[in-house]
Length: 78
Image (cartoon, rainbow, N blue to C red; front, side, top):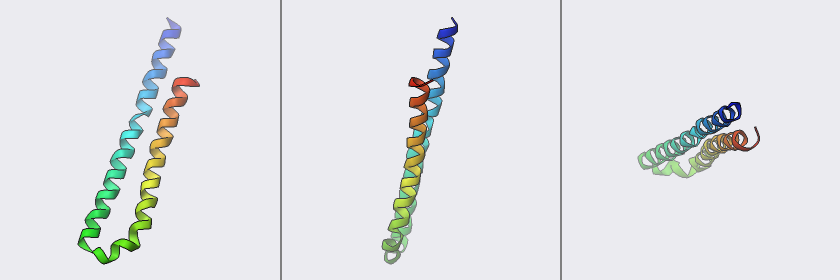
């Protein structure tokens, strides 16, 4: 019984950690959407902000990858 409860806790924790992937998807969508909104308002300034777009996408994706790593660690290492 005790082993089954620990296994259940691992799976619940991994599932909760995987919610960070949804947050990363929402974050990337928000970043790109706002960039396109600004680029359509002022097309001449858009090329100067492209580097900031990619940095923002990278940060949002890094958080998603970290949450995926935590989920994998909870499932297989703990």
